[in-house]
Image (cartoon, rainbow, N blue to C red):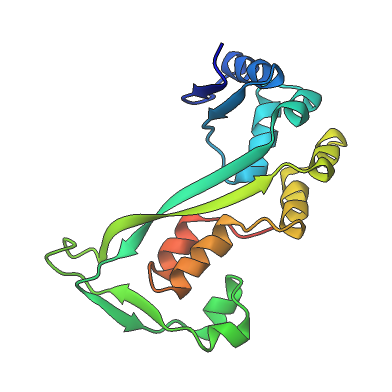
Length: 182
């Protein structure tokens, strides 16, 4: 009788049901599920046919991740982005005016793409009793996301923008691979 069960990917009701039943019987179940963000995972499980009370009983934490391309270290150079564009995507103006941004101009090392390698950004949603109550009351994924943010969840977009601010990736890459925070 294993303590931990790894389920490659939950794609259908049958797999979801087995994973939920294993979690309800005291096993730590780790799996993957394709969604846009952590809160959408709850809705996806329910859309597969898992009842809300089972989701709230079986799930403790949800992690969403994306891999962003990193700026090539060989051809990395400063670039400018209008402050309006930065504030448009959620960066406060007082920070936007101070940011030093970078891009890769393209070279042999990166095949003239300006990017070399990848870095992960994460969104971790602790499935608190408050969030579980919201799910049981039929909240939307957007409402769940807003509540999780209020409880301290750092979104994929915020994590990606931090990588932009750190000079690791470009604003274009961060915007293309994450959705705006609700």
